[in-house]
Length: 309
Image (cartoon, rainbow, N blue to C red; front, side, top):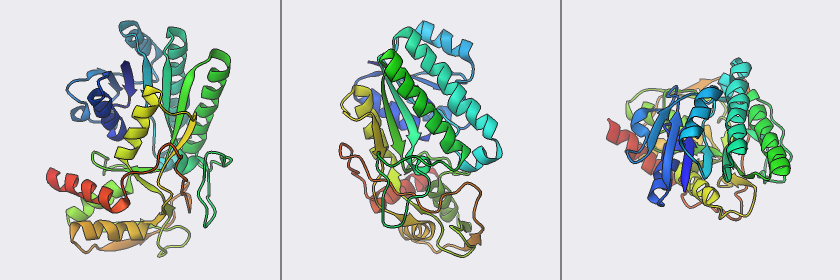
């Protein structure tokens, strides 16, 4: 198949592009390089620099290629940025995605895979439970609202136009190539700072000094596996959680990264960040049991950061 990967110069998208090429597909990568890196794009992929908010540029791309499938990874991904800039968040995650979706409808693209969020869309997950796909979404951040809104558009296009769409609701994804300089991606931030001997900060769940928020950390390799299966049509479900079902506090995560690096960190306690959920844990879909436990994933991530110096 010829597959378009949006956001393919980014953390998750570049891994998806790698895996699709390895599976024998042709890949076109689109990215505006606002957060992605050109060196992440695999050499065997065709790269086009554009912003999905530019419908004319997207139309030109679709004129040049007859895509069989789209893996839509491009997004504004930071909860805190969405809280500060909700209009920008919606322009990218809703309007930009709609420009892409309309072209898929008009040009008869056979399959659409959407990178959504399970880590934010379900809202607060009660203690002792894990959200599954039947859990009613309860977004509390503009980021989660924009992702849920586009899920609704996909459902409408599936009903009205017969679009074959799969929604992948990611837990907190981590692994090699994650950007340590943004506001999202605590594993990358901690890995780089600890490797450099710099202090780290644990933002509070509720009160400064607690163990921080509870999250479900899923390795990027498991996320990639879900995307390849969705692109190839081997997933039966249309909405799929991609997570582990395991919960980890920010402080416990810091200790795990300390252990992998063999260092002791200077830990500073920060206040709760606006928009942060206290607890988010996903029940992985039965079709996609996690393959990489946290310790193994942290070891691979830390090794990548060390290799970069």
